[in-house]
Image (cartoon, rainbow, N blue to C red; front, side):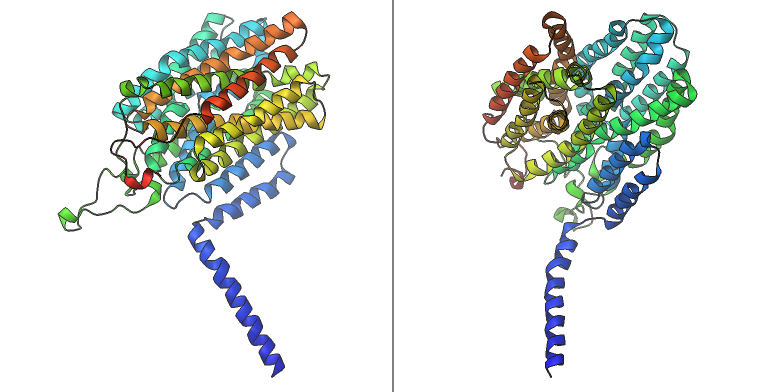
Amino acid sequence: MSGTGLGAAAQTRDASVGAGWRPWLARADIDWRLVGLALVIVAATAFVPPLFRTAFIAAAFATAILAPMPTGTRGFTFAVMAGLATGTTAISTFAVSIFQAPITREFGWSQTEYSTVLTIATFVLVIVGPLAGRFFDRYGVRNFTLGSTVLVALGLMSLRWLTGSLLHFYLVFCLMQGLGIGTSSIPYARVVARWFREKRGQAFGTALAGVGIGGAVVSSMTQYFIGHLGWRDAYLALGLFMLCTTLPILFVWLRDRPEDKGLAPDGKPLATSPAMDGDAPVLEVSAPVGPSAAQSRRQPLFWRMLIAFFVMALGTGGVMLQLFPILRSHGISPEAAASIQGALGLALICGRAFSGYLMDRLFAPHVAAVIILFPLTGTALLAHGAGGWLAVLAAMFMGLSAGAEVDIIAYLITRYFGTRAYSENYGWLYAAWALGAGSAPMVSAMSMDRFGSYAPVLWCYVGLFALSSLLLARLGPYPQLEGEPAADRD
């Protein structure tokens, strides 16, 4: 009797535990196959060359953060991640610096002459970004992005025949940045905003993490190609990789609207129209809402937000893009400095994923204001001459912030200005961000030349981070946008 009673009690307890976690798993809408694949990729890092381990970890993290995305949206989200991983931002941020040594050695260019290409590309983006945003709002994203991907790939391949002319080098990158604007976050953020509503923050964090993932993957591939093929054929290989991998992924899964895949926002099934006796689907459940671009720019709030992101970008670009020489000035070896930069890249991916998750659940301006305290702290540590584990911590704090900031821009635009003129509004704010981030490294270098130390300018960046945090914290409540569903006005 007692044995039977214990068995029954155990069965009752197991049933109650099962009743607790099984419904949660069902509600969570997690693709456990992707979770398993992520674990397999992590395990595989033990068997790959050290050069590719960071890339494998990034791929595992990308697979894991795709798993909780709503059913029906994972292919689309993966396409955005892949597009950004090989887009102009990833190429400019991570691949250009790796090509620097072999190209300058062959042509005898100075480091400044070579690095000027990034400044030129930044100003092209500042000019083209808002104009391209207006185009995307009017004509959509998919076809232009496919074309831009082809043009960027061909531009990279053309560098196989680069001459010793700096003008040739600058012109190719200007064309890639201008014609390749469809591979930047401006169009991708627009389609993410259309595809998601309730989980928009999570979607931005997951999809836009593609830049960080590209940092790990593109860096490893570029170094491998240069080491085994030489820098000329490495450009050719990168272009072919885009054509053979990125382009097919975009062609299959990238769509301007969820309705094009028979879905409503957040992967929900399309509702039917009562007026048509339940036979016809509603075709514009993700219809744009909010003011026009001109109406948005007439609001003081728009310019406060633009200033906040510009000063934040000054600090981020001045530290993150100059992190290697800053660490070297602290007496850190080149190998250790490179490893610390790797930690920054992984933190960037984490920052994007978790900032989006938080913004869906908390008031986004307050989330942004708190996140900015991380780079503020990291920059202060570097200004104090941090080395060892403190330098690693400072780099990770910078990565968490850099991973979150572009997502914050993308999310706040939807909440304060809607999606009617989303790409144009995003283009303006992203251009301000690019201008700040692109010009700040020169300011940091001037500090080193003038004072023999980065500390003075680093303390200035600490003040800029504090100002940005204050401006974002005071944005005020979300407005009720014209045409917005009542459920989105919370």
